[in-house]
Image 1 (cartoon, rainbow, N blue to C red):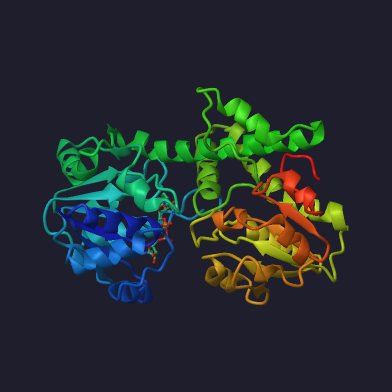
Image 2 (tube, rainbow, N blue to C red; image 1 turned 135 degrees about the horizontal axis):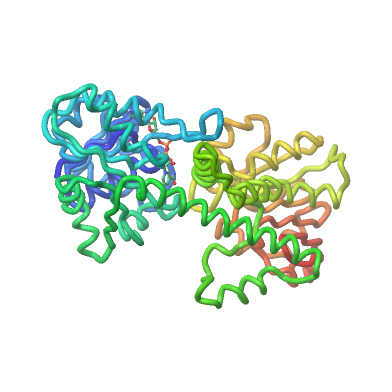
Length: 433
Ligand code: NAD
C-alpha cells in the first residue's frame, strides 16, 4: 500500500521505516530540511537501536522516501500524522501542528484517503481534524485515531511486535484500509483492537497515565522504605510476584521524564478539568514526580550541605532513560541546574545524549566514557541506568572519586559491594551504606 507519514521524528520515522520494512511504499515528509537531507543520505537523526540499518535498507530497496514536499504524499491511501502535541498554556495538548498539517494535507489529496492521527491527541481531535479537512477538499476521506505505544529505546521491536494496535474509527471503509495496512503485523499475532475514535484517543492517555501512576506509587513506597528501614527492591519482588500487580514498571528512581509521560499526564488532567472533573489521582502523580526529580539533589545536600562550591560531580547518564538520546524532560536537566545553582562543577557522560545535552548546557564538561568522567570528581551521581554502568567495578569508583561517594538515582548497584569497596553509597529506597 502507498503510505504517507507527515512528521519524521521519533514516532514518524519509526512508523514509516517499519511500514516500509513490512512491504509498504512509504513517503515520509518533514519541514526540517536538514533532517530530510540527512535521511536521504542514510543519516538517522535520532539514536534508536536497529533503526539506522532499516532506514538505509528500505531506502535502497526503493520502498522508503524522504521529502520536504507535502505534495509527494498525494497518491497515498493512508496518511499518518506523527506531529508534536506539546503542552499548551494551560497544560492541554496543543493541536496546532496536527491541525495545520491536516489542513495542508487536505489540499493535496487526490482520491479517497484515510488520515490517521498517530500523535497523542485528546478526545475530540478526530472530529476537529475532520472539520478542518472537510473545509478544504471535496475528496472523500476518513479520519482514524491510531495512537502509538512504542517505547523509545525499543521502538523498532515495539512497532514490529506490538502488544496491541488500537484503531479508532466508525467507518467500515477506513477499518478495511487499516486492517490491510497492519496485516503484516497482525498476521504475526499482534491484536488489532477496533473501537470508536474517542475511546482510542483516551486509551493512549489512560495507558501513559497508568504507567506514570505506577512509577509515582513505587517512588512513594521507596521514600517510605528509607524512613522505615525497609528495602524497596525486596518490596518490589514481594508485590511483583502477585499476578494481579505484575513485575514490570515497579522500579523506584528519580521520577519519570521524556517527551510523553509528563505532558500526557498533564494533558489528561487538564482534559478532565475542562469537563469539570477533578482527577485527584493524577494531581498526586504529578506532585510526587516533581518532588522525586529533586530527591537526588536533596541527598547530595544532606551529605555535603547547601553550599557545593568547590565540589565536582561526575554524572552518569543524561538521557531520560537508557537506549535513547532523548533528554526531553529528563531528570538530569533539573539535577544539573540545581547543582550548578549551588556552585558545583559538573562533568557528564552519556553514551548517546551528549550532543543533545550540549545544546542545553554548553558550558559543563563532557567526557568520552564512563571512566574518564570520574577523573578529578569528588562524587558520582547515577542518573540514567545504561547497561554499561553495571559492569564498572566498585573498587575503581573508590579509586577515582575524591570523596568516595556515589549517589545512585537508579539503584544500579547492590549496596554491599559498594560498602566493601569503601564507598559511601546512597541510593533510592534502600539504607545508605
Ligand atoms: P518529534 O518532535 O520527535 O517529531 C515531530 C516531527 O514533526 C519533527 O521532525 C518536526 O520537524 C515535524 N514537523 C512539525 N511540523 C510539521 C509539519 N507541518 N509538517 C511536517 N513535519 C512537521 O515528536 P515525536 O516524539 O515523534 O512525537 C510525535 C507524537 O507522537 C506526539 O504527539 C507524541 O506525544 C506521540 N508519541 C511519542 C512517542 C515517543 O516515544 N516519542 C511515543 C508514542 C507517541
